[in-house]
Image (spheres, one colour):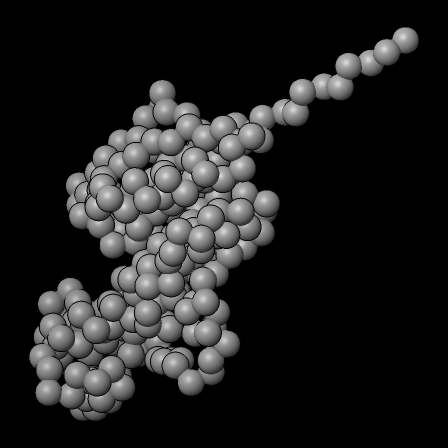
Length: 230
């Protein structure tokens, strides 16, 4: 009796790519389709901003995605409260909890990276300045094998102990109310410390975030940039 060897099984995966630059999407597609083509078949869906991605993710007729590549900074979809790739990642994990998330970003601030990892815990996190064709293939290989991939800049930031910015609850409340347009003189209604203490803390925050001569708007903007405020 003779036996015929079975043909190798082709793994099929649904991929979502969200980026507001078409040439970057094409670069991702070129890398993905080059990955082990004899054993893998990929079905790729594209979205160009938060709104189009939201519509794809929430559409009952959409496929269930296995891996999603998400740029963090993209045109928002304010009507649905989707402002970034981070928000899209949370949405995907709500609708498709088994989807592997790869986030790509230009952010290089330690606290922002730390916050992304804490809130999303992505399977892949890549600083775009680290990105090459080979690096993207390597990251994709790690993630598809159920491993976690951080690019070299992310690893260096996480290994360093000198970039951390820590603030306490009162500082966070001050930043929150500043972001809502609350005047400092009105903050003691919401924060159980004196107006003088609030003013001192605000000055300390400006010094800490290196916007000493900036306005409250500058302080809020910098706090958002490094992940102290959302």
